[in-house]
Image (tube, rainbow, N blue to C red; front, side, top):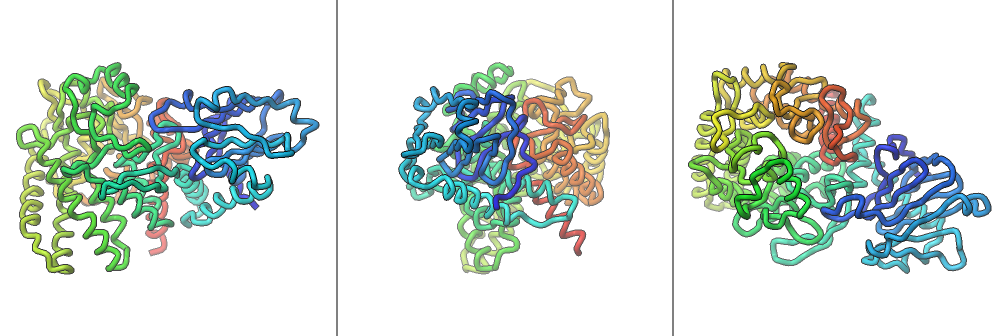
Length: 554
């Protein structure tokens, strides 16, 4: 019996299954069938339309979408439209596949069955899907969902329904792509993408957050996913994105649509020539979280594998500087693409980057000690670099604190002022702040005129002119920044504040009805610019719910 999926809202959301590029949405009496690809707009991924002459009433069960007299079943790269009541429904259902061939999708019919249509990617083997009966095809497809959902972590009853939905989100955002390996070879692997709507690739820092939720029931997949993300470009740089056509590691390789969006927003990034593209240095933090409960032998295996990559990455960041300060040379490398700190000239010195780096080298210092003890290696040169770098970063971070403003202030070339944004709060992630600094951050976090909302933290202070509650990183609440600030403030001794922030974070998803990309700070609903079924929101909700359940049972 296929599992029910009551949380799927086809009018505002989407239907898909693990390892499939097919995504279905509903617009009144039309089901739109998309086959998604990296950096291709959804309207350009449309391969078919299924139109009913009467209003659609659809139920999602397992890998099956049930309609009145028909069903759609998705299994990997194959989709079947099965008409159950030919005499009634064949006349009331029309299928438009005029876009399919151009998008690499074939439409076939089962031999002797004029009421079943099979859609497959030309990159897959269509015959293997044509030979399976409808009954067996549906059983096999539903089993994929059932097996995945059985792994959903168990949490407090009040959180279980949302955890189930978030676990489903992680599963259905799984695709198979060919990725580069450090030995210059390639391999087809399963990865969890941020969302099949708009983010069909492996983004570096998305992966860090996704792994944390995934590990609660599938630690092997989480470790493999992180291992793919930690791909050294050769000089210590980690790429921004790994996708089906290669990697994105330079602004010269940005899709045309991204360049146009940046230019329209007034970004000066396009006028500086090519610069490296990456994401914030949270690799060691994510890795440390994943391996902490592993058996010692496995823990040492991963430390030994990742340590040189992450030390090289830390050295790389310390060579991307303005004066002594590490910098964001491009907005995308911050992960906060349209944050107002990037409205002016580039590069930008930002407190969050210094805090992330300090945290990373501190973790790597501890790894170096472990490796020396377990393998007898001499890592004294690394340890000296890491120790000196940690002290230097902490001093540089404290230099950014402005006592008069009560904030860690970014440095923007040619500007005396800087907007009050989430990057200032993220300074707490480093730990070791002074009482004055910690208290200033706590005051901002709890102040409804700056960052406080019922759903966590706005990404720009409400009293800033650049605050826009519905636009990406210019105001909406994001789950990952809530999460990072909560961890940093707990490390700073503000345990109750951190606890309340985590509760607000979970409340955001529960209010919106699912893991949205970001949330309107006034009502907790999906912000206008946000995509749905967003994997890091789902993963971090799972992690928070599991953490809460463990605390309740201790």
